[in-house]
Length: 294
Image (cartoon, rainbow, N blue to C red; front, top):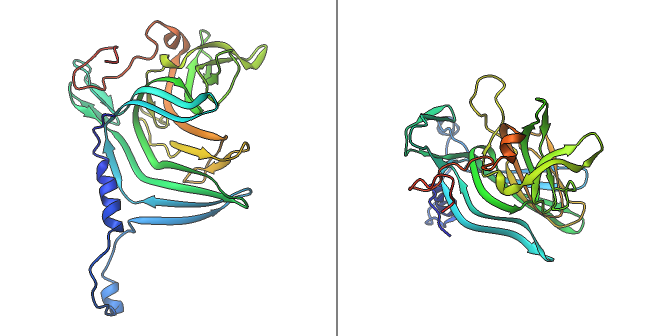
């Protein structure tokens, strides 16, 4: 596995925070002295009640800018299939020559790294009467590109697709037979709204969605906003877990096994996604491979 990640600093900071300190005599501090001290906790722990589970969320008060390349990722490989399977996974990318590319409200020259931005990473546990029902990892804020060659996906991809009439639809995931599913899906597209919304009206292989921009569509302007709903969850039971967004605005149901919630800010034409090149892959290597992976 090849990685280039400034995010390793987060792990180093976490380890330093857990390291033992030298013994010293403890002396009381006056109220006046304490009043001169300001700061923020490195880790915040919250207990969150829910109808079916009790949640404990541990959040680190750090910001990250990272660019990561992973050759191959397989998670939840059991019972003859894989919940998530992808190759050439990348967070962040490199601006291409001649683009004058604008991302995250900044302009990047050719060859400059465009980082994946994240703030306040957290781990959250869900418990019920039987014990640990699930856990997830995510960020209170995330924004940036995610590229991959995905062959199996469990979760949700918040992409919007525009049909030939100009109508915009929420993208739906489908299995190989064209049935709507968020478990080990292999296709993505528009549901058949005229006959059966549980079947594919127009869909293509997931590999066609080569690069996506994680974030929220802006209310005004063109700058992608941060999202707090980007996470990967692991659930024990068939009923799954109802995960709450860190801001409490949304509840996202994650089914048994691995579940990736991938909110994007993108609206694209279905005709482009179905075309020979699909959604083009952003440059993720130091040497620009064009539309090739390697």
